[in-house]
Amino acid sequence: MLPSNLYSITILVFVICSVSTAYDIVVYGATPGGIAAAITAARISSSFSIVIIEPTSYIGGMSTAGGIGLRDLGLEITIAGSVAQDWVNNNYKYYKNVTNPIYQPDMNVSRQSFLDLLSMYPNIQLITGTGPLIDKSIQMNSTRIVQVTTFDDRRTWKASVWIDASYEGDLVRYSGASYTWGRESRNQYNESYAGVQPYTTFANFIPNYPVNATLDNGTLAPYISPDKLGQVGSADLNMMGYSYRLCITPNQKKQAPFVKPKNYDPNNFVILQRYIDSLMTSGKYPTGPPFDKLVDVLIYRGYPSGDKFDMCDSFGSAFTSDAINLNRNYVNGTTQDRLHIAEIVSDYVLGMIWYILTSPFVPEVTRNSLQKYGLCNDQWPENKHIPPQLYVREGLRLINENVFTQNHVVSGLCRNDTIALGSWVHDIHVVTRTVNESYVNNEGAMFKSIAHINGSKSGSAFEIPYSILLPKRNEVTNLLVPVCHAASHVAYAATRVEPHFMLLGGAAGYAAAYSILNGNIDVQTVNISRIQETLLRDGVLLHYPVGHCD
Ligand SMILES: *[C@@H]1O[C@H](CO)[C@@H](O)[C@H](O)[C@H]1NC(C)=O
Ligand SMILES: *[C@@H]1O[C@H](CO)[C@@H](O)[C@H](O)[C@H]1NC(C)=O
Ligand SMILES: *[C@@H]1O[C@H](CO)[C@@H](O)[C@H](O)[C@H]1NC(C)=O
Ligand SMILES: *[C@@H]1O[C@H](CO)[C@@H](O)[C@H](O)[C@H]1NC(C)=O
Ligand SMILES: *[C@@H]1O[C@H](CO)[C@@H](O)[C@H](O)[C@H]1NC(C)=O
Ligand SMILES: *[C@@H]1O[C@H](CO)[C@@H](O)[C@H](O)[C@H]1NC(C)=O
Ligand SMILES: *[C@@H]1O[C@H](CO)[C@@H](O)[C@H](O)[C@H]1NC(C)=O
Ligand SMILES: *[C@@H]1O[C@H](CO)[C@@H](O)[C@H](O)[C@H]1NC(C)=O
Ligand SMILES: *[C@@H]1O[C@H](CO)[C@@H](O)[C@H](O)[C@H]1NC(C)=O
Ligand SMILES: *[C@@H]1O[C@H](CO)[C@@H](O)[C@H](O)[C@H]1NC(C)=O
Ligand SMILES: *[C@@H]1O[C@H](CO)[C@@H](O)[C@H](O)[C@H]1NC(C)=O
Image (cartoon, rainbow, N blue to C red):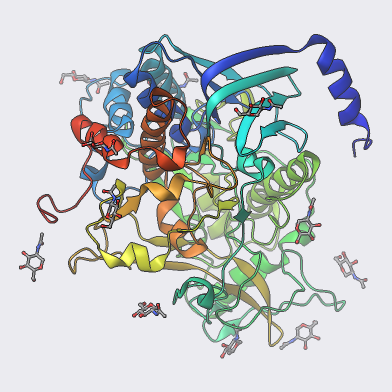
């Protein structure tokens, strides 16, 4: 642990040798949403000074450093005209014989594409490695963020408008804007899918072959929470497990070996072993489950086809690469807490693989089918082929007077304040793992097509209003929030995908520009029609199907 006075020492040093620079717009987080925001703002005026500051050394967030690309996209037409579209259109340049848009490029291609797009705007500066924000980082004047200090690089940043595009939302957190995390109750926003969820598929792992939650010596097995689950529909602070989205490949020429994590204990994987055993005794896989049936292995990138896969949990299995219950206190934790959580998640994901490869209790079928794969040796070479970015599926969420909820998603309203179309289902993996009647109990997963427009279901579009980006006006008036935006846990399950973050980022960039051009007016009073007009000119759709709201 850091001594508690370390930060004050840092501040002292910092006062003496810091660099302070004033910008029109500071974007915090070089995520896809942050990059989109900087680009749209720069389109409005080449005289804006814009900087993207990124706490880590990587850019492109989950689409580059985390391994996801723009995969979760319903209707492709919903990103037409946006920076997201520009990005998918740029990726093919780095592949031979490909001319079509690529949603899941290699991570180095993704990074290069983001840099290509940014290079078209000389008034955007990109600065990485600033280090995370802490509670002493932000200086406010009433409701305006005046300046932000980043301590790793000893700099202060001033800006007229701020955009928090990080997954953690620390600019929101330390600015005094209201926020929350975890799950609301059903009553809070009248959401039928809110709060603790009823018993569902894989709740006890395999039907009729439940997995005992207790070790032989009477202690609870690892990765099971001793907490009692609340009543169905009640609120709690739990969220879907975080993970590292490994890139794995069956192509031997592209393989790097799997690695044993720093802290490995085979006893941590008792539950996994019991799950494998019950898959065998239940007759589902009598000789053992193949690895790609044990955890989900998704097609990762199509170039060339079948070459690379994403190790991802979804709904095909009960024990997976999601590190359930390990992300508690991440959102409101200190930098040290978060580093610790990132480490235990990494140990979990790599440890699970290592267990299957080396445990004598794992059936040969399972082990052999995993041995066909290796890590992708051409991805993240600087980080031993492991994604450097923790997959924070849901961090904090802004709260304002118009939180976007399940009922807004399903309503299919033709809104007059729409700034983006969403097109994904309510997609949440397991949230908690507790004990129910002495058995392991997975809870919280859902994959529900509850978005309707005019009666259409899954894959259709829903309208997202400008207000989703805004803190309360009596709290912060020069901050826009495209990633940790104002949505409930249920709505966020549908809004949390990278294409949406890029659409919301794009709208945030225009909003920032119009705030400045109108004399630094509060972001809450920016003319929404003006933003919409600009988006429409780009070719972005605000209603779907076309003509639906005419
Ligand atoms: C590209 O296309 C040409 C002509 O069809 C073919 O000869 C070549 O092998 C292809 N290259 C790759 C990398 O697929
Ligand atoms: C705060 O903002 C007000 C209004 O712009 C200004 O008059 C005042 O000087 C500012 N205070 C500080 C401490 O910067
Ligand atoms: C709650 O939501 C349902 C739709 O799911 C709606 O029919 C009902 O009127 C809402 N109730 C209140 C009190 O808003
Ligand atoms: C506990 O398990 C029983 C059946 O095994 C099920 O009926 C009940 O809904 C479960 N409770 C929870 C909270 O999952
Ligand atoms: C679970 O395992 C523990 C420890 O071996 C044992 O005491 C307990 O009876 C088991 N529970 C069930 C339901 O089999
Ligand atoms: C039970 O066994 C586990 C795994 O070996 C160990 O971590 C734990 O401390 C043991 N508990 C007791 C009460 O001995
Ligand atoms: C974060 O919130 C939890 C739950 O309210 C609390 O137990 C924990 O102490 C908090 N952590 C910090 C660093 O504030
Ligand atoms: C980067 O992407 C290309 C595809 O254009 C791939 O062939 C290459 O191996 C990748 N990796 C590195 C580390 O350059
Ligand atoms: C949308 O309609 C409401 C109600 O008529 C109105 O108050 C609001 O100003 C309109 N907003 C826009 C952006 O047109
Ligand atoms: C808002 O912008 C629209 C579109 O440019 C314009 O027609 C309208 O007059 C503006 N409203 C105000 C109050 O400036
Ligand atoms: C919406 O539904 C109505 C009634 O079924 C139908 O007449 C209309 O064409 C639909 N509109 C669109 C845009 O699909």
